[in-house]
Amino acid sequence: MPPSRSRKRTSAPPATTARARRCRRPAAVPLDDVAGAVAPPFSSPLWASLSDDLVCEIAWRVLSGDILDYVRFRAVCTRWRSGTVCPRGRGVADPRFHPRRWMMLPEGHGLYPGHSRLRGYVRFFNLDTGTFVRVKLPLFNSHCALDSVDGLLLLQRDEDTGIRLVHPFTGDIAELPPLATLLAQLKNDPSVPHGSDPYWWWSLIRYCVCATVSCSAGAITVMLVFHHLRRVAFATSEDRQWAMPSWEIPVNIAPLSLQGKLYLVQFPCANGSLVFQMEVGSPPLPPKMIATCPADKLYGGYHLVECNSQILLAGYTDSSMSHILIYKLEDLILERFVPVTSIGDRALFLEDRSLSVSSKALPTIIAETVVYTCPLNRCFAQYRLTTGAWSQPFDGYSDGFNPGPYSLIQHVISCCIRNVWYVSGPTLCVLAPSPVVRNWSLDHLIYWAILLVILFRNKGLVYSEKETKKPGWLCWKVKRKLRIWA
Image 1 (cartoon, one colour):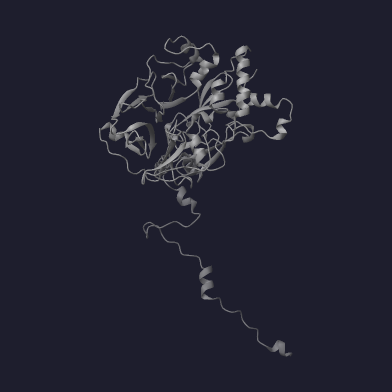
Image 2 (cartoon, one colour):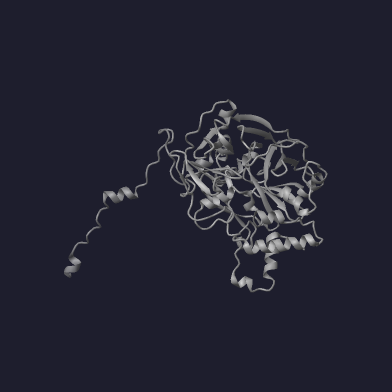
């Protein structure tokens, strides 16, 4: 026998202890033996076996934080989805599903919502987490945005000036009467300044509009505040026209809409800051004064902002406007004048609309700061509450209407200016006529002449060299911008 075959076959080496431990399946730990034991991964049957009452309780707590977290919660399994309330169909009528901490983000560079380059998409920004969501809203092809209240979009239809309240995430829509129904009331009102130009009337009701929404027992009531007129108009989803009460509201600059109530401060504040409150109703009651802050305690305090579920009133220490002072509205109601020394991780943005943004949302936002337009030089400034130091919030120049590519903080500032959401800036919105005006006259020729001058001077409108070589490119761009059918 050859020597190679006479050798004994060596047996395979025994498995090592470490390898045996790796291949050994871990023993299951009974949940009753160890309190608080965590279930193994991919144990969906354990989560699906939760009782319906517990699932509903968890779902409502998740919804109190953010509606998108609620949507993700319902997507875990079929049992959780069937045991919770679907937000679709209730997004507008049920206030619990309102996306309160979400804001539509203006793109800048003349890219208004509905621009052809955006392809029907609109971006939304969460003020607490900094999450960006891109939603396709084809309504902007025939609508323009007037305001955003509690995360809902207030849109105006170009065809008949009808108002629609839209939930951007669920797609629910509440139909409201057209704005054109207010024209007859304004023309017959002796307290409203009259003008012969039809554009004058539209500028009164389409410019500087602040909305408030109230939803109770399935009824949706919307109240519009017109700064120039010092009047309000209200309507429900069942009405056919807007109604305008005969009483007036105090002169104000930056009203605050919050959960069906409207807060405003009378301007000017020479004798102190007088805070008024209005509740949405059908009809609404006149504004009621709820708090007063003397001028020696707060100078120029007319900005109200919601921060951490509290309403703050911001102003200055004295007429030099060198230091910013903040009070809580609940303290002012009780006549307690205790300044706010800290706002946590928040930064306040004060403009036509006031916002509080978490510093965790964007790296360029600094906590314990106030960003606003300084009344002395009309430039954006940033004030630190901890040190009392002033600085610039960003590099470069921006008026808020055409935010450049410098920093995302400029886009947040644009969220505070309602006119940026219009088709092409505040000036064009004022001049833009209603689609019901069809007859061309001398006023229309003057209008188009002014419009051409604005278009050539507007920095936000960017046209490529290829587009300018097309025949009739300017006329097409003008009509595209204003959505006018001649």
